[in-house]
Length: 220
Image 1 (tube, helix red, strand yellow):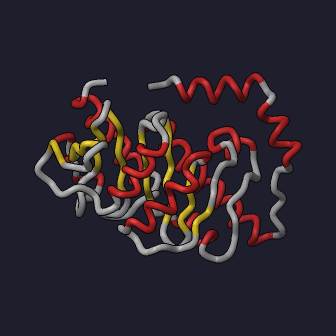
Image 2 (cartoon, rainbow, N blue to C red):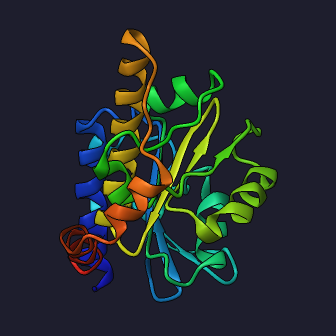
């Protein structure tokens, strides 16, 4: 995908994040990789205020800005940590989803209560205790767990979803927040029942669900 097309995709998915209320105002940030360049959302702008030209190109090796005039997102260290840890990552989505933040910051661990949560996140959702935002310490903590993660929950902060492309990272973030909302609702009426390991393993063995995962992986 050419860098111009990638920037257009970033604009599209940024607006989707706002439409799904996964971010508010200038909160959250996203990026996508093209070779050794990662294109990151700029600091201080809401996603619906950004155009393709606003995304900033950064050299993955040196960390230097090589394209764009704006200041890159303040969380660029987290994005860099993900890409440097895993070469298969093509996109990173960081948002502040309200149900995810509320549950995880109240001592709850967000887990699968329904099939789609597991299908799209693989139930690989490590939780990290609060670390000051925009710091190397936070980036280091993310790097430690991203090796086997689909979405990383940051207590009292938000979440980071990774994917081979933007659509996969977006689906994973949306699935996490849907799971958090279902879990929150279930806590209002009773005791949540989470899917067991046996039930999750059975989902992994279904050809229909494997097809859905493959379709998403290959969709961009």
